[in-house]
Image (cartoon, rainbow, N blue to C red):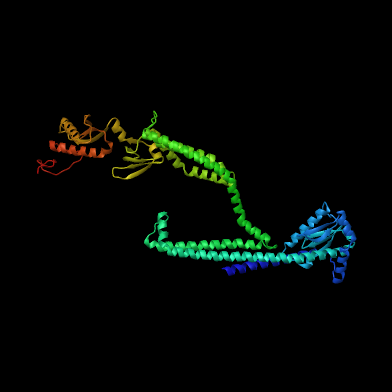
Length: 557
């Protein structure tokens, strides 16, 4: 992997540098409007003539000449301001232009060209203007325009050739250092990857016990090999991600060293650094708001503890408020806490990072629309549960009948009510369905005015009604679970074609045992009628028998 990465980096660098140099050559050819032929015979006399000119020394003494200095080296001298405000400003501008050329990786000697404009002769390197001068400079230097052009060209060429080699060497050394660091980091990652794999393989028991303690994964014996394989696979991919990340960072770092690839390197760095810097800026700007949020949350927690304590005292009966029932304490506490949470969110929301952005607002609106469209039934049940809480139609433990379901209430919350039927079946009923229908509370009736248990029999007209009344009342009095202080009574509900319908009514204050009490009552009715020799032949009873036989069972042993 290291070998292929290095080959790829060098291939990219060579391609980009070659393309940059070719584009530079094309640019210089376009600027080649005036050429100055320089030979050994013409160069030295011109340089000697200008360097020994007395007028240059006079200009220095008068302050009309300024040297172009780079790293304490004087490249050439400026005698006119050209397009600048002053000669000194022009000297500084020319020095900056030369520094820009020095940043380039390779200096091409023939790339300095001379362009003749209306007033000035302009020396350019690959499209970059180095210096402009007119007849004023030539006059001060004691040379012609052509001779001064030769002088400047040679001075710039000599300086750029000597200094640009040093710059390129520094860049290559920097690239080598980057590559060494990159290779060392790859070896470090490889070493850490190997160590991690060995640790996983040699510490199976420690890993499994740690997973079980953290409740992340319940490990079985047959799953241990699979868990180890998954961990090794995870370590492998983590190593690959780090290798790719380091390779990605190293590529723009190397590209940024060279002039022609610097913009590409900076752009690649920007893809990673810009989001990171934006995140850092967002976090740093969020720190004052964070402290404010911490203070608000701290105060909010104290207020919640106070609310919980107050309603717990009401629920336990230590605090009594007239007209406020103890079973209202918990739901009222929840309502107050919901209101406090909404108030907290309202305060904290503007302090969150990005709260004022359009994206944050759009997400808030989208979530609100989803909740409003998808929570219609939830809101309906919640409001119904809230109304039922303060209406108090029943409590947990009450025996009720609602929505064709009869049983004991085992749970009542803001959304649903759960009822256990006599057959131990738990039925969940939405609160909105209970509120929109009707419900019967047997427990509350049993405590307030006693619940009436009733049962009917039909007896033929041949039996005196007084006997039937007595037998039914005796059966009720012998039934456990009925109230002895209230006398049971009998109602004759109808006179039908073949029989009379009688109904026994007795009082009980134990609604939870309603079915068992009613079952025992019916058993005692049968016992009383059989003992008295009264047959229960209606409403439908058919038997083939002789006239002496009866329908009364024989209890004699």
